Length: 323
Image 1: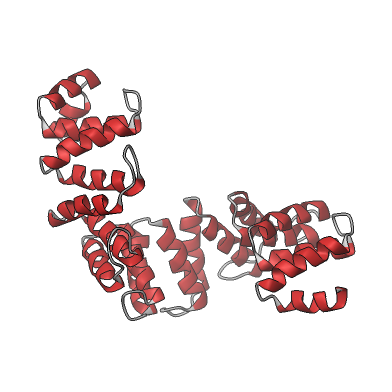
Image 2: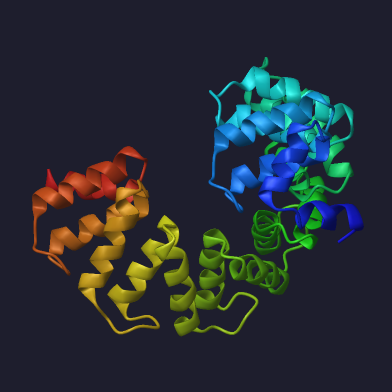
């Protein structure tokens, strides 16, 4: 911690407030931060906004970004994307990578400005080149989806890697997917598992699901159904429908866990209610045969119908036999 940072950090809120009221730019910015987090003072987003505004108007780059974020999110002020962009542009002109990335997102999605994916990519690239991991992930997504730029899985992998190496869990998970399926890079299950493990350790439910799948099927790691259930459970608890469906199947068919039709139905239901077609089909099947739940053809038809509407061919065929 440098001397200036230490000086402001050690100030009491009363001292910081007095200095901020005298016009000290750094004190204004830091006071806003304390109000935002409720550190040593009662949390107040409106007060945070007020002090960010004072510092931003004096040219503080970080305050300008934060003020833009307040407008963008509606923190302490009415949400206003155009106002957010005004301040993001001011900070971006000073080289702020976070603002450059957010301007890019606004262009991509048409928030507060006319939608222009090409300009969106241009701004996100500025931030990514500066090493901002979130922007690197966003740029990778653009290349993967062909949004604002010609689709190129190889380029996507390059940017996912840069972000993943900085610890970005979304990039780590997506890089794992690229290695698992050979998108933009040679298929390598061991590397897929390595990146899934890093993201899963940070709490990514998607990576936890993928890691469970690798353990269940012995992809890049020795097959271990118990470990598969462990990872599926972590992801399922966080609400991932794919993991919930797979965990349900583990309970239904006694894979890595003691058979329990009741628990299978519980997890199929959670996934089905999120609109996951495969889980809807599996739940319908449980109702049709009365497995883990009271038999009900009406309920089975209800869930088969939901699954069929999403294009599940097996559900469509089932309905032909039941209706």
